[in-house]
Length: 365
Figure 1 (cartoon, rainbow, N blue to C red):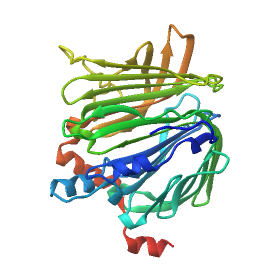
Figure 2 (figure 1 turned 90 degrees about the vertical axis):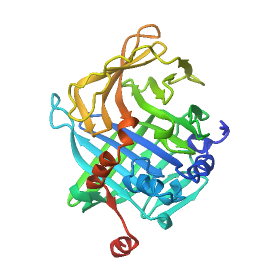
Figure 3 (figure 1 turned 30 degrees about the vertical axis):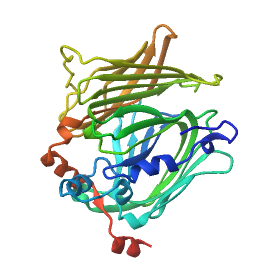
Figure 4 (figure 1 turned 90 degrees about the horizontal axis):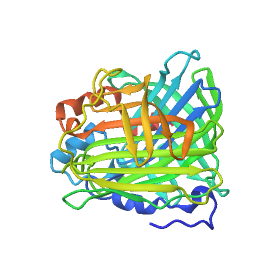
């Protein structure tokens, strides 16, 4: 997939190549947006799925031999975090994980709509997200309605997709960084509360023609940006099923026309470094992820999400050679796909996922 610098901002790319892979059996595509409040009170993560890769229902249908594709399993995930004081750890204020029937997914070249929520590129190249979702309570019960808008400013340049893994059976997996730092506005409402803030956003998307667990055993990722949006960076550190390690580093200065990219494939190590399980209940999470001279370090007491096979946490990215004395603050994720293969662990996901039926949606409308 190529990108064009003639069209502004997010219009440089198209949804269609990702959706073509999501239409494969076991395929997926997701769009990831993360917004950091300039006042450091709120943090928000939004993922729009055409193929919910962590869906227990999707995995179970595939195990039964059904020819189900990512387009049959659209979903919306949103997590809102709040810090009540400068020294407090962020706490989850709101959780949305809604899976929808296939008929509720509508797409075109520059938009994704799932039921009453949508992600679309505006004519000026900015990204506009309309959110209209019941929040999700434990045991998959719907909670209060969350609605409002999120808007991201146009990035200067969008990179072409990067191949991050190739499964033995032929499924290819891609990552495309869409914006390492955009200005962002968030305006949401739930019950009688308005949640409104401005900040900096990161945006990317991933897509593949098969299951993640059929290609990767572990998946680590982190991004960060300077407080003044002068520079942003991403570290990818993944391990394939054969033990080969793939590391990607991306560093972009605000005035650069193109980022500095490092891409390395390491042979399987003789011995894996022991991960550090402190701060987490379910999963041992590496303290450091690195690619080239970029080093993403997990910060203490920054746990955002702790699940049996997945963790989200705060990070600081440094580069002693290219960014001496500068720390880029952001978020990291770690995924143990060997653990995700266990159906018993997948079943636990149902307690935090709401399966929305056509009848539910008609009643809400």
